[in-house]
Image (cartoon, rainbow, N blue to C red; front, side, top):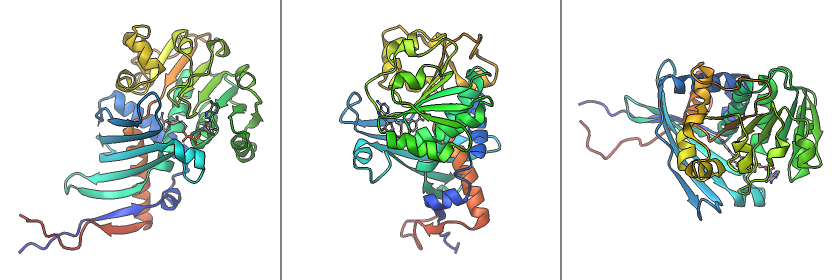
Length: 343
Ligand SMILES: NC(=O)c1ccc[n+]([C@@H]2O[C@H](COP(=O)([O-])OP(=O)(O)OC[C@H]3O[C@@H](n4cnc5c(N)ncnc54)[C@H](O)[C@@H]3O)[C@@H](O)[C@H]2O)c1
C-alpha cells in the first residue's frame, strides 16, 4: 500500500517575512520591474481580480480582493493573494488599513507550499510599482517629490521613488495627520531632505514627481497643481480630480482591465468616452519599448496603479525560498492522516 503524504507547508508571519528580506527595497524593485516585463511578454497568467466593496463602490468602507496568479518562466510559481482593507482599522488605529495573506501553491501536488503575511509584501511592492513607474516616466532631472499620504504605502513609495530616480533630493510630504509625516521625516532624513508641508499646494507647487496614496474617496488634487513636465503616480484610486487625467499627455496603467471594471474617476472618464483606451498604455509595454511613456520633458504623465497579484507572488516567491533555505517559519500540515479516499 502507498504511504500517505502529509501535506506540509511553511507558515511565515510578518517577522519571518522581514527576516527573509521583506524590507529589502532593492530586491523588491528588481522583482517588481521583472514582473512588469513578464506581464508585457505574456509570461504570466493573471485573471482580472474580483473585488467585493461594502457597502458599495462609492462609499467603500470595506474591501476584499482575490488575486490568483501563475508566474511562468524562471519564477515558475503559482499563488494567490487575499487582500482586505478596512477604514475602521485606520480610524481605531489598532490594525493596519490593509491586511493581506499570500498563499503559494505547489501545482503538481495541489497543496499549499507556504502561507504568509502579505501585508508587508503588498506595501513594499506597491511602493516599488510607483518607483518603477517613476524610473521610466519621470523626467531624469526630477529633484522634488510631492508625497501625499504618509501611511503604510506612503513610506514604501517614498523609499522606492527615492531609490529609483537618481536625482531626487527632496520629499515634501502632506498628510491630514501631521504625525504620520513626522514619522517619515524622522526615518528618512538621513537619506533625503524631508520637508513637512503645511498645505497640499506647498507640497506640490515645485514638485517634479507627485505620488498620492491616501484612503480618500473624494478627489482633491487639482489640475492647476500639476505643472508641465510632472510625473504623477496615483496609488490610491481617487485622489486626482478628472481634469488631472484629462490634461495628461500620457496616461499609463498597470492593468487596463482594472480601470475598465472598477469604480474610480478614471473609470468614469472611460465610461463617458473622455479617456480612451487607445490613448492609454501599459507600464509593462513602456518598459519593453512597445508603447510610448514620456516623449517630451514638458509632458505631464499620469500613472494609475491598481495593483497586480503577480507583483505579490514574485516577491513572495523570493521570500519563501530564502525562508526555506534559512529554516525560518513554522511547518504546518493540512492533516496528519486524511479520511478522504485516495488513489
Ligand atoms: N495600487 C495598489 O496596488 C495599492 C495597494 C495597496 C494599497 N493601495 C491604496 O493605497 C492607499 C493608502 O493605503 P495605506 O495602507 O497606506 O493606508 P494608511 O491608512 O496607512 O495611510 C493613508 C494615509 O492617508 C492619509 N489621508 C487620508 N485622506 C487624506 C487626504 N485627503 N489628504 C492627505 N492625506 C490623507 C491618512 O491620514 C493616512 O496617513 C489606499 O487607498 C489603498 O487602497 C493601493
